[in-house]
Length: 261
Image (cartoon, rainbow, N blue to C red):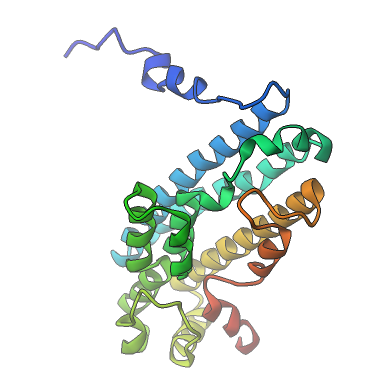
């Protein structure tokens, strides 16, 4: 089969569309940086969602090798996501304020992909849907994610498939509700940890990801405080709201068992 000679680096990566997608609302030098950083975030959110969906399938199939390799990729991307905040922190508060009013009511809190990512990880807050019109694609994607099993649900099925006694009520729980701590699940986790095999290592990778996500939230709070202080953000939220999201793990049972090991 002859190779299509019309395919180029530029066309394959759709660079004309990507590099033409930075459309600042002012002539301020730093606005391009602000746009690029947030667009790159959205690309990484897309990849994280893609990888987490794949991880769920590998866990439910009991495929340890693929699960571990996917965890490695997820954790590497998450580190990059955290480090990316260092780039935007090179912008001083005065530089940001020079174009901030041009953002009007647009806000990172409206990121449908970030809300979808949180939902895949288990956050259940239907209130986030109020940021979108009911006919918008973001509304549909986030709503669907809130109604599907989370990564933790897939992990519990994985654990049961490996022979651990996960309570039926945990396996059959209403996935539209937040995960609550379960003594029965914790007992199964303790046995897995004491066996010190692949399920224990999978559990540790989930803890790694949870910790990394909390690190990202903390760094994000400090970036906002550094840039706008205690002001409200363009979407009506600010550092105070962001601080309220800290120390809320996606996988509470995995943290609760630490004191029992």
